[in-house]
Image (tube, rainbow, N blue to C red; front, top):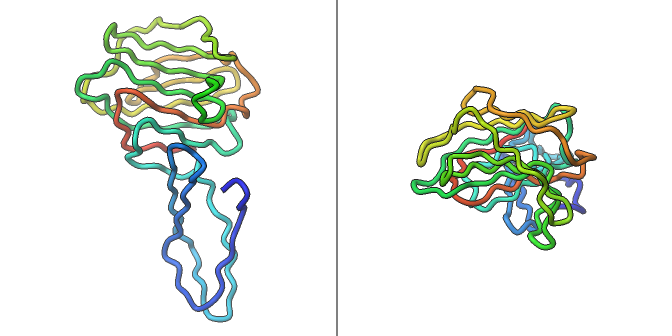
Length: 198
């Protein structure tokens, strides 16, 4: 998909759905586009594909890497709905550079709810080295097997995290430029029902 920027459809065909599958990613992403116009005889319709990272994803397998076309930018909102497994140790959400496991990617924001000690660790990683953890929270908002809605808002100087409609925590930017962080990576003891961006 990196080299294919657009495609055309020509001929007597009615298009109801177009599906894009991003294969280079070790955790494939799928997006579906329902065009607003159709190809009719003698009419050429040019379709510019929606970027996979701008379309919702439902029930992805975990671990899951979601490409963010153009990287992070202020004003971006990331909506994640899911639930911890029934006997979780922890789950993790990273905003990171690329999807490769080795060498370890730089991580701009690591959000790590830990059930074994009821903490939520926030951190960043550069050149394989974790920085100082932030752990202060007013309460632990997650429960085994109970659904949650989490929103990460990218602001000019911080990430603002809300859980179930309530502001939960902030994490000041440590790594820049934001645009180099182009992957949402979710792993460990969680089931995700949907991911979307705005």
